[in-house]
Image (tube, rainbow, N blue to C red; front, side, top):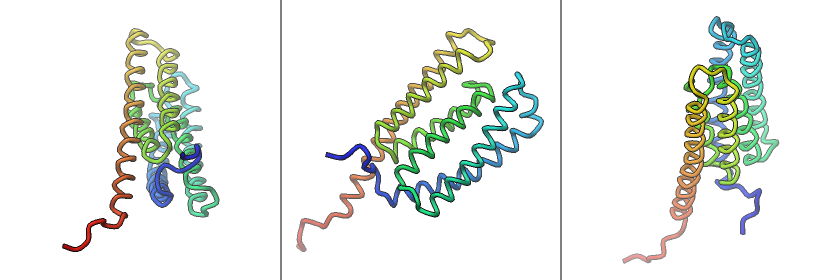
Length: 195
């Protein structure tokens, strides 16, 4: 029986995926900073969204730098770093999503991307936890956001994104499991001798 803290994927694969995620964060952080401090970010209403967006963009840049340093120093186990960094990404991107208009913005796709990565690298329970937290956050954002449309429609849309998050987590976990089984199968010695 596998323990709760045992890595789902091979540590080398998790570490390689963390390098790719760190590169993605380093590319995304300046874009978010540029948006936060541009005229687009400064014109957000209500005014607290401007401050929240700038704080979240700066936090994302700081987190990206810290995560790449921790990854390079190898001072934290790869599976723990993956879990903590993906949770941080989901929280910060969720705040940025709120600032840009909630579920109407295209950033929900970015959140689904992070849920998919968590399904590939982390235990299924953790990926489903992330998906459930995202679903709850999207519904809460739909409820507290200024209402231009019916609240029922926004909550239903948020619920559909939540369902998409669960499906993404389950599908990526299944895909990751198949990949690991294929990797183990390819490493095993052939059982049939020469003909």
